[in-house]
Length: 333
Image 1: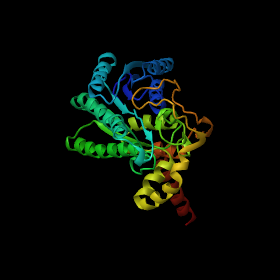
Image 2 (image 1 turned 90 degrees about the horizontal axis):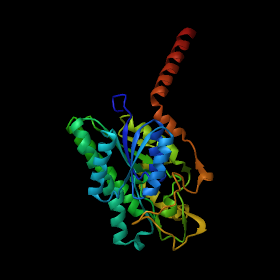
Image 3 (image 1 turned 90 degrees about the vertical axis):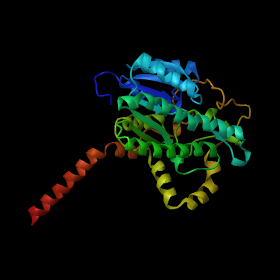
Image 4 (image 1 turned 135 degrees about the vertical axis):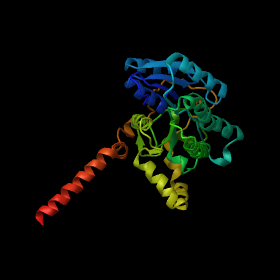
């Protein structure tokens, strides 16, 4: 929190669609001033309108996060227009659905520039402003795939692993400096976002998130909570928890299981269009908002997220139950 009565100033990268759009909307619902960063200006304008209808304020900043100069310019414009940045959230992503043997060096380079270096550039821009003030929060959007790589998404998985390592270093350095700037990483499950419509793919069938699928609003609520609670890391959804913990216990079992199921689970039965546009180098304007095409299959809630964000009340309830049980035992004695 910003420690004053003024609205929070929040920067969201990847705000044109998908989870970034849902996160921006979530903060807008709370009256925040939200700087919206992505390449597609038209979709950003749509996101801004949604935020302002909800009572927040939006600022459109067309930016390619793979360019550090553009990211720094966007950060400067955000502070000039909206005020000191309280929260910076890195969401922007792209991917290539392809076996490793069919990937190209350019595929890996571009995904790394957006998904990993884009987060690094955003973090550097945020730290430049937050460290002198000794306050602020940086949120990195991660994934269960930051711990457990899966077939057909080697570039994406590698970048999420890289962010995880980057964050370990950053946490230690902030501790060393006794800084009050906070950083957290929110590990996501499969979500119903447009990435499965416009990410580059070499698969024979259309891509899909690995079920179970969650609506982006479930994740956006978790991001909002993580931005206001000093947790080093937050898991979203039971599948995320199972994937991360399971991989620590038996990674070879994960190799076997994903080798058998990972190709089919990431594809629908519908043939892919080899001429479909993708957003690897240029934005694809479809104005899908936050949701992808899987609304009928996506979950609107997660009990695991509720439990994570209510641990204080749950601990109190458990303590009260224990005291009541002890009192009942003493009475019976």
